[in-house]
Length: 246
Image (cartoon, rainbow, N blue to C red; front, side, top):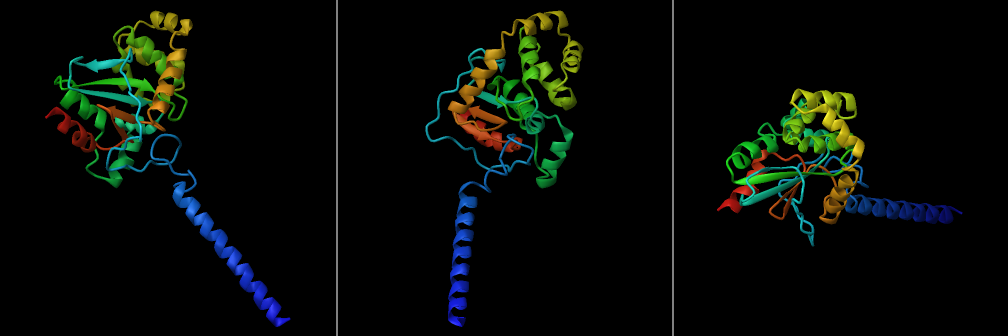
């Protein structure tokens, strides 16, 4: 009887150990079973990769008729897939101070990349930047449609900055219209544009293009064919852009 009990205990422990080993391997391969993401696909704080990543077989990402700022003949083209409801997209754009403070607490040298890109590269004619929609948190649909309508009035980038600086407005159409009016947009024209639903399919096509190109969350930046993911510091973008200008 004692031998049978001993054998049973040994067998039980072998089974437990085997199960634990399988779970450990699974956790490694799924990056914690997908609980923590490196972007705005959920509410977890993203890790900040130190090097740009690129899918194995990237698909060409084109500016098309996306809102764009900068010289059309610029040597560097940056296409950002973003979502106005994504707090890390807001931080990358220089908004959402809470997230910025969190990123700086981890790295005091962290700088918002988009304002730096605008000042050092776009405003100087070295680069142009285009904005496309990708559902990071998925609640920025109305904000994106209003921003696209504002683009018809040449007000996209001004509204872009306003929305990211006022994250509480993202899901409130009335507040979004107030922000648009503050930058000089014609609200009646915005209403006509929104009622036409002309940009409903644009959001779908942007998302499909992003997925085909390997984008899995926001913000994601295509820089002359190189994919840089996450709200990385401006210095990480300089490391990619400067060699392209030589």
